[in-house]
Length: 233
Image (cartoon, rainbow, N blue to C red; front, side):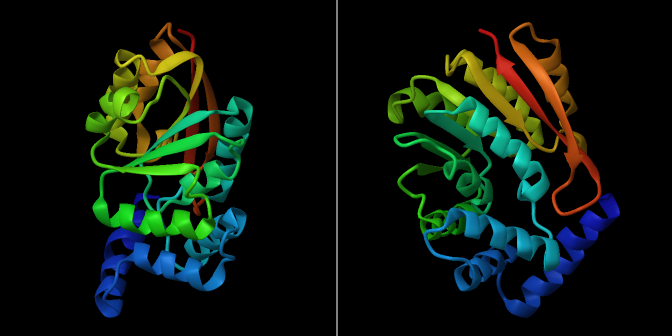
């Protein structure tokens, strides 16, 4: 798995970027703009999956783990959801297409280039009314959620950013009183590349009830899993 990722992420991508004078993320967006149906979030999700399974690997949650994400969102039925790690906007589009009328998703992206791509992806999918993209570090944005973005509590949180931020950001969500009894956290990539600190924290905490969902790394046959942690108060 690691060797395949190094090949895809480092060597092949750098060569392609140099030859085409654009980033992989820009190529994903271009493929969507040319092949997906504008205003159809399912078409956008399917088109990204097609590109990343057939052409270039990318760190979206992907089609297999995407079904776990869908099921968790549908069960939580959130009014206010938070995503940490927008990347190209794949999971923001995937989550927002399942939100009830009047619900909203706040998605946080640290990388300005990714944020610019995601903004276009979200608008093309036609879900910009449900999704607000917040640019900056999660540890700065989370404490601003209540006052600046009028969040009382979060019903659903998707953690898919830097793995070493999973635990401190979960603690920050608790400290900022952003979780209520029944708030659902779903964490991606807990086996590959792995988030052992997070698993240790939520599984040992009396404040969380955890469920593990074994799966595979996006677009590969590498073992991975997602962890659902329900806040007990």
